[in-house]
Image (cartoon, rainbow, N blue to C red):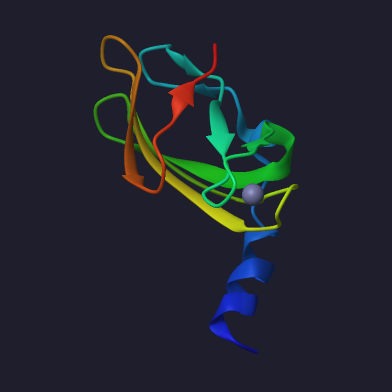
Length: 103
Ligand SMILES: [Zn+2]
């Protein structure tokens, strides 16, 4: 089994993002999701097609690790973001394309 195939099997074991959202931060702020786009063809990828998890870190922040297979071109996309709910909610891409928050 190649590492690439192993990676694609493992990501399907992650919870659906819709199961773990909205994420409520320690200060009560809520994260409802983000607009995902395919790295390869820029098609939008809906939240119910994205698997991932959120790992809280200090200071009303959390790290979002998410993966999805593009429904249009079947490219494998990964999203790694640092969410910061200190003051106005912001999202910092750790890797991959930038994101815009959904309300
Ligand atoms: Zn695509």
